Image: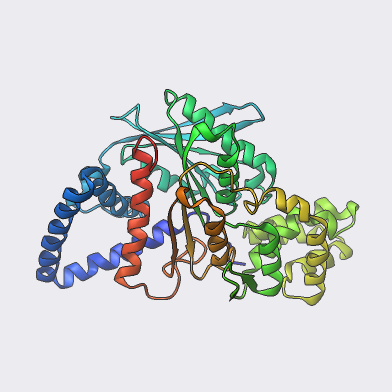
Length: 411
Protein backbone atom coordinates (compact mmCIF):
# COMPACT_ATOMS: atom_id res chain seq x y z
CA UNK A 1 0.00 0.00 0.00
CA UNK A 2 1.88 3.10 -1.19
CA UNK A 3 1.67 5.63 1.63
CA UNK A 4 1.42 9.33 0.76
CA UNK A 5 4.51 11.21 1.85
CA UNK A 6 4.02 14.26 4.00
CA UNK A 7 6.13 16.70 2.00
CA UNK A 8 7.10 15.02 -1.24
CA UNK A 9 5.74 17.94 -3.27
CA UNK A 10 9.03 19.78 -3.04
CA UNK A 11 11.40 17.09 -4.31
CA UNK A 12 8.90 16.45 -7.08
CA UNK A 13 9.04 20.09 -8.06
CA UNK A 14 12.80 19.90 -7.94
CA UNK A 15 12.59 17.11 -10.52
CA UNK A 16 10.95 19.66 -12.81
CA UNK A 17 13.92 21.93 -12.24
CA UNK A 18 16.32 19.12 -13.11
CA UNK A 19 14.45 18.68 -16.40
CA UNK A 20 14.90 22.40 -16.94
CA UNK A 21 18.66 22.06 -16.48
CA UNK A 22 18.76 19.16 -18.95
CA UNK A 23 17.07 21.42 -21.49
CA UNK A 24 19.64 24.12 -20.78
CA UNK A 25 22.49 21.72 -21.51
CA UNK A 26 20.89 20.76 -24.82
CA UNK A 27 20.14 24.32 -25.95
CA UNK A 28 22.68 26.65 -24.31
CA UNK A 29 22.07 29.55 -26.71
CA UNK A 30 18.32 29.39 -26.11
CA UNK A 31 19.03 29.37 -22.37
CA UNK A 32 21.20 32.50 -22.59
CA UNK A 33 18.43 34.35 -24.41
CA UNK A 34 15.85 33.09 -21.89
CA UNK A 35 18.06 34.16 -18.98
CA UNK A 36 18.45 37.63 -20.49
CA UNK A 37 14.68 37.90 -20.85
CA UNK A 38 14.25 36.71 -17.28
CA UNK A 39 16.62 39.37 -15.99
CA UNK A 40 14.65 42.03 -17.84
CA UNK A 41 11.44 40.70 -16.32
CA UNK A 42 12.95 40.65 -12.84
CA UNK A 43 14.17 44.22 -13.18
CA UNK A 44 10.72 45.24 -14.33
CA UNK A 45 9.09 43.43 -11.43
CA UNK A 46 11.61 45.06 -9.09
CA UNK A 47 10.51 48.46 -10.28
CA UNK A 48 6.86 47.57 -9.74
CA UNK A 49 6.69 45.49 -6.57
CA UNK A 50 10.12 45.88 -4.96
CA UNK A 51 13.33 43.92 -4.59
CA UNK A 52 12.26 41.77 -1.57
CA UNK A 53 9.60 40.03 -3.63
CA UNK A 54 12.08 39.32 -6.42
CA UNK A 55 14.41 37.74 -3.86
CA UNK A 56 11.52 35.59 -2.59
CA UNK A 57 10.86 34.42 -6.14
CA UNK A 58 14.51 33.43 -6.58
CA UNK A 59 14.54 31.72 -3.18
CA UNK A 60 11.48 29.67 -4.09
CA UNK A 61 13.42 28.15 -7.00
CA UNK A 62 16.61 27.60 -5.00
CA UNK A 63 14.78 25.97 -2.08
CA UNK A 64 13.32 23.35 -4.40
CA UNK A 65 16.81 22.41 -5.59
CA UNK A 66 18.08 22.18 -2.02
CA UNK A 67 15.23 19.92 -0.94
CA UNK A 68 16.00 17.59 -3.82
CA UNK A 69 19.66 17.49 -2.73
CA UNK A 70 20.73 19.05 -6.02
CA UNK A 71 23.34 21.73 -6.54
CA UNK A 72 21.81 25.19 -6.65
CA UNK A 73 22.83 27.13 -9.80
CA UNK A 74 25.63 29.56 -8.96
CA UNK A 75 23.52 32.51 -10.04
CA UNK A 76 21.05 31.66 -7.24
CA UNK A 77 23.50 30.53 -4.58
CA UNK A 78 23.54 33.86 -2.79
CA UNK A 79 19.82 33.70 -1.90
CA UNK A 80 20.26 30.45 0.08
CA UNK A 81 23.73 31.04 1.41
CA UNK A 82 23.09 31.04 5.16
CA UNK A 83 24.61 28.08 7.00
CA UNK A 84 22.01 26.39 9.20
CA UNK A 85 22.12 24.97 12.70
CA UNK A 86 19.63 22.47 14.13
CA UNK A 87 18.53 22.12 17.73
CA UNK A 88 16.11 19.61 19.26
CA UNK A 89 13.93 21.35 21.83
CA UNK A 90 11.42 20.37 24.48
CA UNK A 91 8.54 22.84 24.39
CA UNK A 92 6.77 23.04 27.74
CA UNK A 93 3.42 24.40 26.59
CA UNK A 94 0.25 25.19 28.57
CA UNK A 95 -1.57 22.06 27.40
CA UNK A 96 1.25 19.55 26.85
CA UNK A 97 4.96 19.07 26.33
CA UNK A 98 6.12 18.68 22.74
CA UNK A 99 9.37 17.77 21.07
CA UNK A 100 10.42 20.11 18.25
CA UNK A 101 13.36 20.91 16.03
CA UNK A 102 14.51 24.46 15.38
CA UNK A 103 16.42 25.30 12.20
CA UNK A 104 18.27 28.61 12.46
CA UNK A 105 20.35 30.59 9.93
CA UNK A 106 23.72 31.20 11.57
CA UNK A 107 24.11 34.71 10.19
CA UNK A 108 20.57 35.79 11.08
CA UNK A 109 19.86 34.58 14.63
CA UNK A 110 16.98 37.05 14.95
CA UNK A 111 15.39 36.16 11.60
CA UNK A 112 11.61 35.99 11.07
CA UNK A 113 10.13 32.64 12.07
CA UNK A 114 7.85 30.04 10.53
CA UNK A 115 6.23 27.02 12.18
CA UNK A 116 5.91 24.06 9.79
CA UNK A 117 3.52 21.32 10.96
CA UNK A 118 3.99 17.82 9.59
CA UNK A 119 1.21 15.76 8.09
CA UNK A 120 0.21 12.22 9.08
CA UNK A 121 3.48 10.34 9.19
CA UNK A 122 4.90 8.08 11.87
CA UNK A 123 8.30 9.83 11.70
CA UNK A 124 6.77 13.15 12.67
CA UNK A 125 9.36 15.93 12.80
CA UNK A 126 12.05 13.45 11.67
CA UNK A 127 10.43 12.76 8.30
CA UNK A 128 13.37 13.30 5.88
CA UNK A 129 11.50 15.48 3.37
CA UNK A 130 10.20 17.71 6.13
CA UNK A 131 13.72 18.08 7.51
CA UNK A 132 15.10 18.92 4.07
CA UNK A 133 12.39 21.51 3.49
CA UNK A 134 12.89 23.17 6.88
CA UNK A 135 16.66 23.30 6.39
CA UNK A 136 16.26 24.82 2.93
CA UNK A 137 13.87 27.45 4.27
CA UNK A 138 16.33 28.31 7.02
CA UNK A 139 19.12 28.75 4.47
CA UNK A 140 17.02 31.57 3.01
CA UNK A 141 17.30 33.46 6.28
CA UNK A 142 14.25 32.18 8.20
CA UNK A 143 14.03 30.38 11.51
CA UNK A 144 11.90 27.26 11.13
CA UNK A 145 10.29 25.36 14.00
CA UNK A 146 8.93 21.87 13.31
CA UNK A 147 6.93 20.73 16.35
CA UNK A 148 6.00 17.07 16.63
CA UNK A 149 2.28 16.48 17.15
CA UNK A 150 1.76 13.11 18.89
CA UNK A 151 -1.82 12.64 17.65
CA UNK A 152 -1.05 13.44 14.01
CA UNK A 153 2.07 11.28 14.21
CA UNK A 154 -0.18 8.40 15.33
CA UNK A 155 -2.74 9.00 12.54
CA UNK A 156 -5.31 10.73 14.74
CA UNK A 157 -7.01 14.03 13.89
CA UNK A 158 -8.19 15.51 17.18
CA UNK A 159 -8.70 18.83 18.97
CA UNK A 160 -5.51 18.38 21.00
CA UNK A 161 -3.54 19.13 17.85
CA UNK A 162 -5.33 22.46 17.37
CA UNK A 163 -4.07 23.60 20.77
CA UNK A 164 -0.63 22.13 20.08
CA UNK A 165 -0.28 24.14 16.86
CA UNK A 166 -1.51 27.35 18.50
CA UNK A 167 0.70 26.89 21.55
CA UNK A 168 3.74 26.15 19.37
CA UNK A 169 3.11 29.36 17.41
CA UNK A 170 2.73 31.30 20.67
CA UNK A 171 5.99 29.79 21.95
CA UNK A 172 7.81 30.81 18.78
CA UNK A 173 6.27 34.29 18.92
CA UNK A 174 7.51 34.71 22.50
CA UNK A 175 10.99 33.48 21.57
CA UNK A 176 11.06 35.87 18.61
CA UNK A 177 10.76 39.01 20.67
CA UNK A 178 6.99 39.21 20.40
CA UNK A 179 6.82 38.93 16.62
CA UNK A 180 3.98 36.83 15.15
CA UNK A 181 5.00 33.83 13.06
CA UNK A 182 3.74 32.17 9.91
CA UNK A 183 2.28 28.68 10.18
CA UNK A 184 2.43 26.15 7.35
CA UNK A 185 0.24 23.06 7.79
CA UNK A 186 0.43 20.00 5.57
CA UNK A 187 -2.58 17.83 4.76
CA UNK A 188 -4.89 17.41 7.78
CA UNK A 189 -2.59 19.67 9.81
CA UNK A 190 -3.39 22.58 7.50
CA UNK A 191 -7.05 22.49 8.56
CA UNK A 192 -6.05 22.28 12.22
CA UNK A 193 -3.75 25.29 11.72
CA UNK A 194 -6.68 27.28 10.32
CA UNK A 195 -8.75 26.38 13.38
CA UNK A 196 -5.92 27.44 15.69
CA UNK A 197 -5.61 30.78 13.90
CA UNK A 198 -9.35 31.36 14.22
CA UNK A 199 -9.18 31.16 18.02
CA UNK A 200 -8.84 34.61 19.65
CA UNK A 201 -6.15 33.42 22.08
CA UNK A 202 -3.81 32.47 19.22
CA UNK A 203 -4.70 35.26 16.79
CA UNK A 204 -1.92 37.63 17.97
CA UNK A 205 0.72 34.92 17.51
CA UNK A 206 -0.02 33.81 13.93
CA UNK A 207 0.60 36.27 11.09
CA UNK A 208 -0.51 33.92 8.28
CA UNK A 209 -1.53 30.33 7.59
CA UNK A 210 -0.55 28.33 4.52
CA UNK A 211 -2.60 25.13 4.20
CA UNK A 212 -1.55 22.54 1.61
CA UNK A 213 -3.84 19.64 0.67
CA UNK A 214 -6.26 20.33 3.52
CA UNK A 215 -9.95 19.66 4.10
CA UNK A 216 -12.91 21.87 4.97
CA UNK A 217 -15.05 19.04 6.38
CA UNK A 218 -13.77 15.75 7.80
CA UNK A 219 -17.22 14.22 7.46
CA UNK A 220 -17.40 15.10 3.78
CA UNK A 221 -13.92 13.66 3.18
CA UNK A 222 -14.91 10.48 5.03
CA UNK A 223 -17.94 10.20 2.76
CA UNK A 224 -15.70 10.75 -0.26
CA UNK A 225 -13.68 7.66 0.73
CA UNK A 226 -16.90 5.64 0.41
CA UNK A 227 -18.48 7.28 -2.63
CA UNK A 228 -15.54 8.64 -4.68
CA UNK A 229 -17.49 11.92 -4.88
CA UNK A 230 -17.11 15.33 -3.25
CA UNK A 231 -19.47 18.24 -3.79
CA UNK A 232 -17.98 21.58 -4.83
CA UNK A 233 -19.49 24.83 -3.53
CA UNK A 234 -20.85 25.64 -7.00
CA UNK A 235 -23.02 22.49 -6.93
CA UNK A 236 -20.90 20.38 -9.27
CA UNK A 237 -19.42 17.08 -8.13
CA UNK A 238 -15.78 16.07 -8.18
CA UNK A 239 -15.47 12.39 -9.03
CA UNK A 240 -12.14 10.72 -8.33
CA UNK A 241 -11.37 7.19 -7.05
CA UNK A 242 -10.01 7.62 -3.49
CA UNK A 243 -6.72 6.22 -2.24
CA UNK A 244 -7.12 3.38 0.28
CA UNK A 245 -4.96 5.32 2.74
CA UNK A 246 -7.86 7.52 3.84
CA UNK A 247 -10.11 4.62 4.78
CA UNK A 248 -7.26 2.86 6.59
CA UNK A 249 -6.64 5.96 8.69
CA UNK A 250 -10.33 6.14 9.68
CA UNK A 251 -10.26 2.46 10.65
CA UNK A 252 -7.08 2.88 12.68
CA UNK A 253 -8.39 5.98 14.46
CA UNK A 254 -11.66 4.33 15.50
CA UNK A 255 -10.60 0.71 15.67
CA UNK A 256 -12.88 0.07 18.66
CA UNK A 257 -15.81 0.30 16.21
CA UNK A 258 -14.46 -2.60 14.13
CA UNK A 259 -13.05 -5.27 16.46
CA UNK A 260 -13.86 -6.56 19.98
CA UNK A 261 -12.06 -4.90 22.89
CA UNK A 262 -9.99 -8.01 23.55
CA UNK A 263 -8.58 -7.93 20.01
CA UNK A 264 -7.88 -4.20 19.80
CA UNK A 265 -4.16 -4.02 20.55
CA UNK A 266 -3.17 -7.05 18.49
CA UNK A 267 -5.08 -5.89 15.40
CA UNK A 268 -3.91 -2.30 15.93
CA UNK A 269 -0.27 -3.36 15.69
CA UNK A 270 -0.85 -5.18 12.40
CA UNK A 271 -2.84 -2.27 10.94
CA UNK A 272 -0.25 0.23 12.15
CA UNK A 273 2.60 -1.65 10.48
CA UNK A 274 0.49 -1.78 7.32
CA UNK A 275 0.14 2.00 7.43
CA UNK A 276 3.87 2.33 8.08
CA UNK A 277 4.56 0.19 5.01
CA UNK A 278 6.78 -1.99 7.18
CA UNK A 279 6.10 -5.34 5.53
CA UNK A 280 8.49 -7.27 7.79
CA UNK A 281 6.89 -5.94 10.96
CA UNK A 282 3.43 -6.45 9.47
CA UNK A 283 4.11 -10.11 8.72
CA UNK A 284 5.45 -10.59 12.25
CA UNK A 285 2.40 -8.89 13.77
CA UNK A 286 0.01 -10.93 11.61
CA UNK A 287 1.76 -14.17 12.61
CA UNK A 288 0.93 -13.47 16.27
CA UNK A 289 -2.80 -13.04 15.65
CA UNK A 290 -5.46 -15.59 16.44
CA UNK A 291 -7.51 -16.82 13.46
CA UNK A 292 -10.32 -14.42 14.41
CA UNK A 293 -7.95 -11.47 14.76
CA UNK A 294 -6.21 -12.31 11.48
CA UNK A 295 -9.53 -12.43 9.65
CA UNK A 296 -10.52 -9.06 11.13
CA UNK A 297 -7.20 -7.45 10.14
CA UNK A 298 -7.40 -8.78 6.59
CA UNK A 299 -10.97 -7.55 6.30
CA UNK A 300 -9.97 -4.03 7.36
CA UNK A 301 -7.06 -3.95 4.93
CA UNK A 302 -9.47 -4.72 2.08
CA UNK A 303 -10.95 -1.23 1.90
CA UNK A 304 -12.85 -1.94 -1.33
CA UNK A 305 -14.87 -4.78 0.18
CA UNK A 306 -18.61 -3.98 0.51
CA UNK A 307 -18.47 -5.47 4.02
CA UNK A 308 -15.61 -3.18 5.03
CA UNK A 309 -17.29 -0.15 3.48
CA UNK A 310 -20.50 -0.81 5.45
CA UNK A 311 -18.43 -1.07 8.63
CA UNK A 312 -16.72 2.25 7.87
CA UNK A 313 -20.05 3.94 7.15
CA UNK A 314 -21.42 2.79 10.52
CA UNK A 315 -18.30 4.02 12.29
CA UNK A 316 -18.41 7.40 10.52
CA UNK A 317 -21.99 7.91 11.69
CA UNK A 318 -20.86 7.52 15.31
CA UNK A 319 -18.23 10.26 15.03
CA UNK A 320 -19.91 13.09 13.13
CA UNK A 321 -19.69 15.48 16.08
CA UNK A 322 -16.01 14.68 16.63
CA UNK A 323 -15.27 15.22 12.93
CA UNK A 324 -17.09 18.57 12.99
CA UNK A 325 -14.93 19.71 15.92
CA UNK A 326 -11.76 19.42 13.80
CA UNK A 327 -13.25 20.82 10.58
CA UNK A 328 -12.87 24.45 9.46
CA UNK A 329 -16.41 24.35 8.01
CA UNK A 330 -18.59 26.76 9.97
CA UNK A 331 -15.68 28.14 12.01
CA UNK A 332 -13.90 30.48 9.60
CA UNK A 333 -16.12 33.57 9.85
CA UNK A 334 -14.13 34.82 12.83
CA UNK A 335 -10.75 34.24 11.13
CA UNK A 336 -8.67 37.43 11.01
CA UNK A 337 -5.42 36.03 9.61
CA UNK A 338 -4.06 36.02 6.02
CA UNK A 339 -4.49 32.61 4.37
CA UNK A 340 -2.82 30.84 1.43
CA UNK A 341 -4.45 27.65 0.09
CA UNK A 342 -2.80 25.03 -2.12
CA UNK A 343 -4.24 21.78 -3.47
CA UNK A 344 -3.48 19.21 -6.11
CA UNK A 345 -5.98 18.87 -8.91
CA UNK A 346 -5.65 15.07 -8.76
CA UNK A 347 -5.59 14.74 -4.96
CA UNK A 348 -7.23 11.43 -4.03
CA UNK A 349 -6.63 11.73 -0.27
CA UNK A 350 -8.27 15.11 0.29
CA UNK A 351 -9.96 16.13 -2.98
CA UNK A 352 -9.41 19.61 -4.35
CA UNK A 353 -13.13 20.31 -3.94
CA UNK A 354 -12.28 20.70 -0.24
CA UNK A 355 -9.91 23.57 -1.02
CA UNK A 356 -12.68 25.20 -3.04
CA UNK A 357 -14.89 24.76 0.01
CA UNK A 358 -12.23 26.35 2.20
CA UNK A 359 -11.96 29.22 -0.26
CA UNK A 360 -15.69 29.88 0.14
CA UNK A 361 -15.37 29.80 3.94
CA UNK A 362 -12.38 32.12 4.42
CA UNK A 363 -13.27 35.83 4.75
CA UNK A 364 -12.51 37.39 1.36
CA UNK A 365 -10.22 40.09 2.76
CA UNK A 366 -8.04 37.43 4.45
CA UNK A 367 -7.74 35.08 1.47
CA UNK A 368 -4.46 36.06 -0.19
CA UNK A 369 -3.97 33.25 -2.72
CA UNK A 370 -5.54 29.97 -3.82
CA UNK A 371 -3.96 27.50 -6.22
CA UNK A 372 -5.35 24.18 -7.39
CA UNK A 373 -2.51 22.83 -9.45
CA UNK A 374 -2.45 20.02 -12.02
CA UNK A 375 1.24 19.56 -11.20
CA UNK A 376 0.50 17.76 -7.94
CA UNK A 377 -1.91 15.28 -6.38
CA UNK A 378 -1.83 15.01 -2.57
CA UNK A 379 1.53 16.77 -2.18
CA UNK A 380 2.90 14.34 -4.75
CA UNK A 381 3.78 14.74 -8.39
CA UNK A 382 0.91 14.06 -10.76
CA UNK A 383 1.62 11.90 -13.81
CA UNK A 384 0.21 14.60 -16.07
CA UNK A 385 2.97 16.57 -17.78
CA UNK A 386 2.82 20.14 -16.43
CA UNK A 387 2.96 23.13 -18.71
CA UNK A 388 5.35 26.02 -18.16
CA UNK A 389 2.42 28.10 -16.94
CA UNK A 390 1.51 25.40 -14.39
CA UNK A 391 5.07 25.30 -13.05
CA UNK A 392 5.29 29.08 -12.97
CA UNK A 393 2.06 29.39 -10.96
CA UNK A 394 3.31 26.87 -8.41
CA UNK A 395 6.67 28.62 -8.03
CA UNK A 396 4.87 31.97 -7.78
CA UNK A 397 2.58 30.63 -5.05
CA UNK A 398 5.51 29.37 -3.02
CA UNK A 399 7.32 32.71 -3.48
CA UNK A 400 4.31 34.52 -2.02
CA UNK A 401 4.54 32.36 1.09
CA UNK A 402 8.26 33.06 1.45
CA UNK A 403 7.61 36.77 1.04
CA UNK A 404 4.84 36.64 3.65
CA UNK A 405 7.19 34.88 6.07
CA UNK A 406 9.77 37.61 5.68
CA UNK A 407 7.43 40.59 6.04
CA UNK A 408 6.21 42.06 9.30
CA UNK A 409 2.49 41.47 8.90
CA UNK A 410 2.50 38.49 6.52
CA UNK A 411 0.54 40.32 3.82
